[in-house]
Length: 188
Image (cartoon, rainbow, N blue to C red; front, side, top):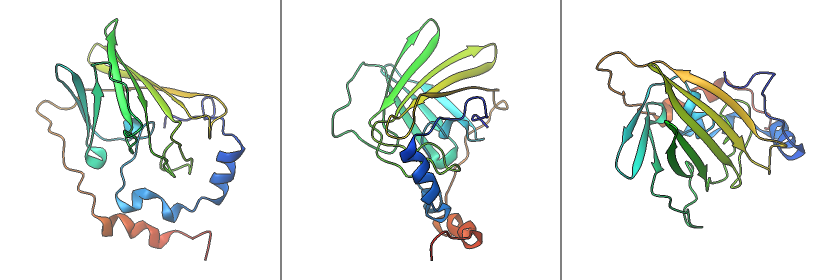
């Protein structure tokens, strides 16, 4: 888990109130809605990086997501808001630096198990680098609508087995809703 007592995000009153009234049964994950950073990168699934001349594609097994990190310095427009936001990056000193903005409001946009939302003000900064065969990343999330201060974590991934291919996530909406039957709703 990336969030420990040492680095758990400091929530403001708005986020704490949202957490208090949030009902797990309405979490978008139960409708096959994909998770977003900061949660998506630390879910325990495989991923791969594909380098193109003007972009890096980050393909996640989790939720069959593909994030595009634009390397051409583009500026997002007011029409570019989406669940995954807009990622712009560059290489510096052997590391890939990525800044993602223009996220749509998401009721579980911080992660999909703590009931912390994220707003259109969410900004995620990632730095990826290699140490030997390991891939490391430091991620920082800012969202002044819900967080009192930025929150960060650092993680690492080991290479997958030789010849490994990402598997389809194939979220089935009926199967995804199955756990909801066992949740105790906050509201009747």
